[in-house]
Length: 441
Image 1 (tube, helix red, strand yellow):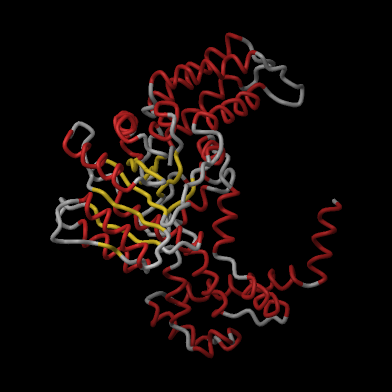
Image 2 (cartoon, helix red, strand yellow; image 1 turned 45 degrees about the horizontal axis):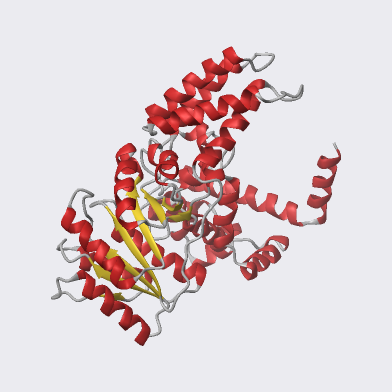
């Protein structure tokens, strides 16, 4: 995500490295490179120009402290201005109403139908809503079936009238159905359209007028860059939408849409799609995104993802087992499953400050745990519960059953033993005292 932009910005800051102070000359040189980086990322030209001018004025007006290098000061100013450019703070979605109605809009192929499912799933699990998905795309042959499959996967009903070709009437009927069946949220998926398609634009305007939604969201493919911003402007003039959703932010995103859209249409980015899985949806936090663009990681989002999978009861149970040296392979594989639920491994690792740049060229497969899981699942229940009984013949059988070799099995068992010792040390008095001694040093 934004790798090329991050690299270009980092190179531009190096111009100030070794400089004793910020001057008009070295700031101008640095910001020329920053502007080039933004334009290369397909940021709107006017937005890039105004951004660098603002940064210049703030940089020249700063009294650089002796303890802060000019390069560090510039990074701080650019960070703060990037966050401001993208909206400053996260903006929540309006889901008040009986039922609350969300109207999805966007171009063909922007990922609108899939994101409708993601949004319904998130609002159901995290906000306690009882949603209804509405199949309002009467033109794309597979659209209704796609929404039904998504609805089944997330346990959300889908309202569809397959013989009805009037999306306005379908939307109105869906809201009546929601009221009758106790649904407090209606998400209407509409047909993808081109901004220049007058007939289709009039149709979605008619849907808006008929259902009076609390929230109109414009879904845009983040990989389309400046074209996405131009389209957003056209849609906003017709619909006056409430917010933007950026999909495919996990792909080869140049950054133009994320950095330009707020300044061009003056509407906040509310959510981002970060993968194909139905839980790959995040609230958009401008400051955190600025952190990631500048290679600072996003430790807050990483902690939040971990907390979503955190089970307090399970944690207490594990702590007791670790203290008694009873942590086994059943617990180990359970923890692996929790990590996998948090999302794409490379994306998670990139949230750790300083790690993103180190792993950008590495191919971290989501199946990285596959070999470990295969080895553990090839053990008998007794072996998983009592790793001490894993002798040579058992290890050979496990290697054969998991499609690995004895060396790989031995390596995993050794790593498991070392992990178990370390975990036990950290939960006992000796481990706690060692940590205190380290802090004193």
